[in-house]
Image (tube, rainbow, N blue to C red; front, side, top):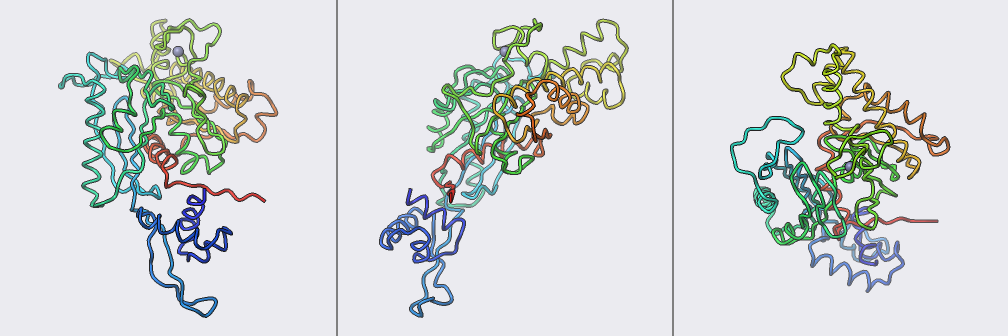
Length: 409
Ligand SMILES: [Zn+2]
């Protein structure tokens, strides 16, 4: 605790002297000096020379500052299509980034039904994580920070994750089931690894750097190939005992009979996600409804959204129906968690008002009035950057260099 307090004061109030730390913490001067010596030995704090004047008229005190480049945090987002790696310093500032197509799973279909050239053989999870680790090492070597060590790694995956064990429980788009991501990456990189899902990471990133404006109590509805939610309580991810809190995409909706890739039937995700939008459009076309989509060879949710923007009635109705179902999900989050803000993230957020207007209308219908009071619903501000920024920020939150001092009256 004392170490945290001293480091926080140097980080947020620096440059500071040992004496002024002792005054603001009411710690004894020898205690402060011992902690400062330890922080200097660890490279987290450095001396920057004497201050200009001494208050007491004696020798000017030596000032201390936080050394943000002493430690690195690594954010990894393994997406269904692309993998992004960001290296940040101990203040979270990004100093290097790498991006490459996520290796295709063995025998697996291309995610989202899109066509992808099948040039290379499919890769097992160990191969994918090995490539991630190699890219991380290479990016750090290229950043020219000799001696800087990795304080923590945030690994973000598109599926069900167990934060407590660091296992990716199920990621259908990667073809992964029960993959010990934390243990594999920790062995490769020699640093602690924290595993989260994309919704949790996007929630943290939007809260700190995007649409959330640091509200702290925020729910992010993550709508893309799948549907999940990241819930923050006072800025921290709410995990639940098994790490799967927020997986509302697998809540059953009465009257829906669609099979879900979780094994159940009638999950919300089967009517409110990218693939759900494509299926609904195909069904309407098969029923003979006219649409510009009929002229396309194949289409994805983005094509349906583009047709809706251009005034296509079938596409507009499909997007609006998905928005209403997402509004149902948002009302569950509002009733269950009473957030200050709901952010809509994931790939579908880019559709904008055609999706968000019916979503907001459904929230008004379904959410409990006292829980809804003052709640705003906003689209993601960080877009496709949210997951990897969240990975960096989560690594920072979990690393020992991150402390938050809350002063209470
Ligand atoms: Zn399901």
